[in-house]
Length: 223
Image 1 (tube, rainbow, N blue to C red):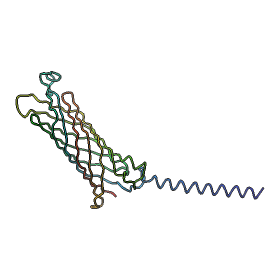
Image 2 (cartoon, helix red, strand yellow):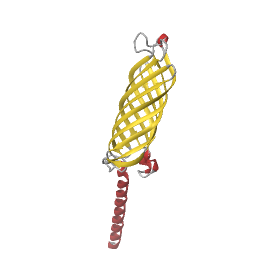
Image 3 (tube, one colour):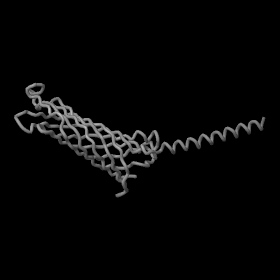
Image 4 (cartoon, one colour):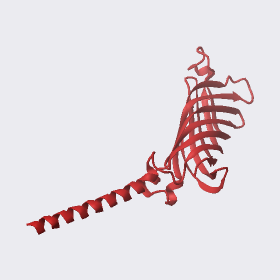
């Protein structure tokens, strides 16, 4: 009986030791995807620029109560070629999520119309493949993003006496990008890559939609 008790005790101790080692390995693997874990790929403050070009469309009414929804004053641009730029000031909360502030501006025109839009607010960037495949995967630098806040836009006729349109209210944008690390400097590293985004400004008097293909250039203050 004594020998049996000793044997069972040894088995329990060995099982507990193996379980502790396995748990330690899991905690180490999960450290790169936890907010309180040590970052491997992204950390610190983020300062960046975005530029791009694409197609924009806008329509609406002058921002006056007596003219909104009156077909006499309705204006529609059709498709316009445009370009835009943005400034990012964010923070890398973990290897798989960035969050911060965003400010952008876009201009577009065709033969008959020209439009300008500005917006600002919050931006979140999520790297969805980091939790799935780890930070060493090639997919770890692919991200989905959204920015939202307040935006304003104008639509003006380039010729004739058309009334145009303007408005200030809600802004929403979403898209995707990929980034490559291109070098370390200033205590952090630089990253660059292509981006594709859809932006929209909604107000009672005007709507403006745009699809832009461009690039993103950022500096991470941490690793």
